[in-house]
Image (cartoon, rainbow, N blue to C red; front, top):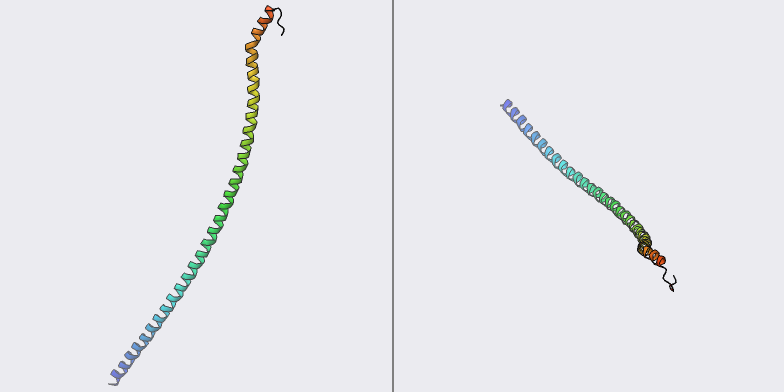
Length: 124
């Protein structure tokens, strides 16, 4: 009987010890899960902060590039307007010269013919 009682005590002791270990393991598992969730939340917050900072930096770079492009376009527009004005002026001068040359080409033979005929009383 003693052997059976001793065996029964050992089995009960092992069961109690197993329950204690199971409870301890469950407690540690819950603690681990809580710490894991906290770490994930902190990592998410840090990642969001980094993303926001990167977005802000990106927007600043884009805005600077836009501003620079606008300034370059303004300068190019001013240069084009100045060049257009210069070309129009040169074209107007050339147009006047061509017109005079055409007139001279047309009238010169007639003038020579007229001088050759020497109409009396007509002064040129």
